[in-house]
Length: 168
Image 1 (cartoon, rainbow, N blue to C red):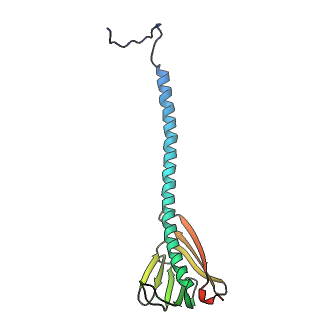
Image 2: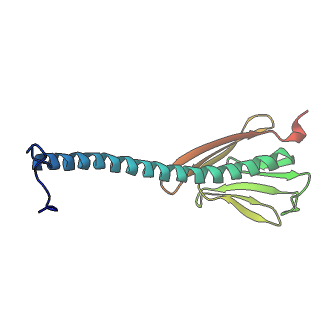
Image 3: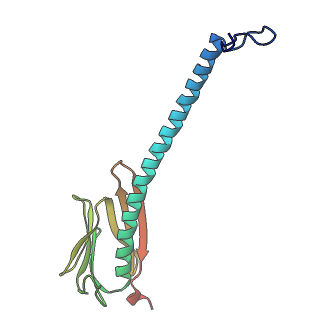
């Protein structure tokens, strides 16, 4: 039988693997596979966390930058509380031509930061856990906000602004 598989080599030494060798290879591959699955799982979890962080960071930065830019060109700040600020500015925006009584306020119940004028009301962020406006020195306004994502991840933003009209 020319095509039959030979179980011995040219010198009569048996060829192939023993059962112990096969079991040992299967066990080692199982251990390596277990570690690989743990590694991939932790990488996916970290990716999900970072994606959530990026979403809240983007939303928070957009809200605080918009607020700071408008406060920088404020003509007169008429009212300030720990969670809201109202001011007049020199000129309106293309989307909102009203330049008087612009109010930024935070609602703790709905966790929203909104911008309101007589013409337009817009919600800037819906994930703000804590928010405060303080005046550490004359004509300097410090804005602090802590944002919370859907998975419980948090991010804190702080910015300060000095309206240009008060700078001499």
